[in-house]
Image (cartoon, rainbow, N blue to C red; front, side, top):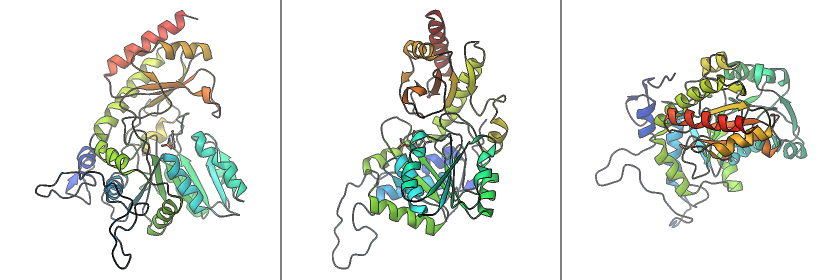
Amino acid sequence: MTAGTSGVPGPSGPASGDSTRSVHAGRPPATAYEPSLPGPTFVSHYHLPGEARGPYTYGRDENPTWERLESAISELECPGDADAATVTFASGMGAVAAVLLSQVRSGDTVVLPSDSYQATRSLQQRLESYGVGVRLAPTAGDAQLAALEGARLLWLETPSNPGLDVCDIRRLSDAAHAAGALVAVDNTLAGPLGQRPLALGADFSLASGTKALSGHGDLLLGYVTTRDAALAAGVRQWRKTVGAIPGPMEAWLAHRSLATLALRVDRQSANALALAHTLLTRPEVTGVRHPALPSDPAHTVAAAQMRRFGSVVSFTLPDRAHAERFLAALRLTSEATSFGSVQSTAERRARWGGDAVPPGFIRFSVGVEDADDIVADVLRALDEAAAGA
Ligand code: PLP
């Protein structure tokens, strides 16, 4: 189910597959008596005598720890592409806001997915208050195609959170470019080893690095990658101006975590598929979604553009009380509102409001535990939840 051995030469070394690339990405050449990943640079002011020239002037503007992480993410999003540039942010929403708010002006139109991550959609009112028109259309069926006329920016989120619908990035990018619009893809659910939006025609690939990219549930981070130097400069300037910078410690921890990215997402994708197959056998469970399931409505498009299918499985239990009994009965999986961590987590998504999901809808993020243990825990919790009905 993975295609991790593409053999593309990366900027930092010879031909490599995804695991090799994940381990080495962004690390400096081996140097005697130096660590392979230099520690975080904690700095607000650099010594800056005379003329204020870079490369390092002030801690909100540049930091070598960010730069190493950014070059690593560029290698993963766009292997071997010297034009790729990444800008990291304090969180995924920092990255989302940077692209949306730096790229559109009063009078422009943005096309958003009506089923995107709800905090992204919550920017609709802010955009409208600035005189930006917002059109909403669902991810499934490439429905955003019909909303492109006169748009400045098309925003895709595929797979979507939490519904796991998928759209055709290449098809939508081609149509958006023909209509004169830029294309941004929120790549959080798939991640850089799951799909490469820039190779599929998008202008921006951005993500919450809080999820599988860093993968340990212990930090927040975001990033934007683009192959266009002017777009990268605009996003970097936005970060500097609003100050949405990552902490050096978070950036360093995320970079260290990249070494295991391929291992983690391979395991998570396989575990997620095993769980999805198990859920299909339960009569009280409906609407099981995972893009790797051959029966999933998104599978054909997903299989054509994704290289790994991610850690999230969604499904629906009969009602709110049933879902709450299920979540309370899980022993291995804790309730949490995030995904992509090494630990399995799950939540009843409707507890927040804002998503068009039934009361019993569960978003389950599968960790790197043993598949048999995850499946056994879920089956036992399903049995207990059904017995309590
Ligand atoms: N984009 C998507 C698809 C998300 O799911 C999330 C968070 O869940 C974000 C963006 C925002 O990321 P963060 O929580 O790191 O700000």
